[in-house]
Length: 273
Ligand code: DGL
Image (tube, rainbow, N blue to C red; front, side, top):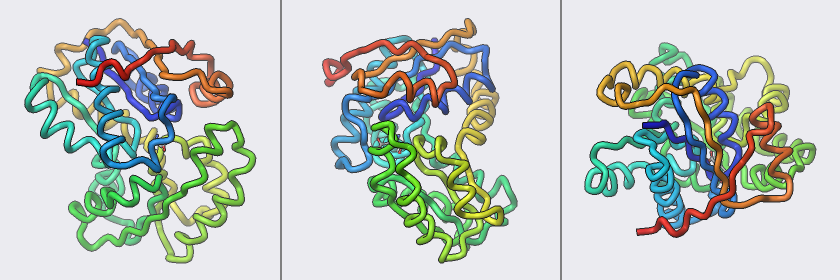
């Protein structure tokens, strides 16, 4: 069985790269739902339905474990998928998100040094309050301030990374004015902007990129769950699927993945049950 990695688009390719660099022995299947990205302005029901279709596709491709690299899917759909769908229809399969491991990284794993944590994410992730809830479950005294960066994902998907600066200045000012000590990049797409973001917030703010957290957390999870690890095949392969060929998809995919990942076009809507 393989490990699936799901994102609303191709932003998760950088997470795929980080995971497969850290755990190169496994077989992976990446799916980016480029036909319906961005998810960030979508309703709970849309994000749930699309994420479930993505997971079904990955299960059919032989995945027994799926990582939702997408924060919006993790925030909006993960709990319902675990409790209502997997528990009933696929009790032997696992779907993991990125928000709880990130919350652990900014609290317990660093001795709860950050008293005020900023989160920049999509509108759907911010409105779900998932980051605030999960961070404060682990450290009730931590203050969490959020900003929904609505314009960033569409600009990045359109290949206009050079136009993100003015929006970054505006959003990050809202957070730095509140004296944050750490900033969570709560969306796969923002890792491409990490250097620009660090320049704007200054060295005194610790920028938290999930690519530095999730691979290690996945390794820890597999070492704690031998029954899952034992089922995973170890052929060091990766297949890449997307649901639409967008204008800039190949140049962006290469930016994220650091080489052309050879994307295969697929229709996943037929997987709705
Ligand atoms: N990949 C999504 C995330 O990590 C953001 C992009 C979108 O809005 O679809 O939240």
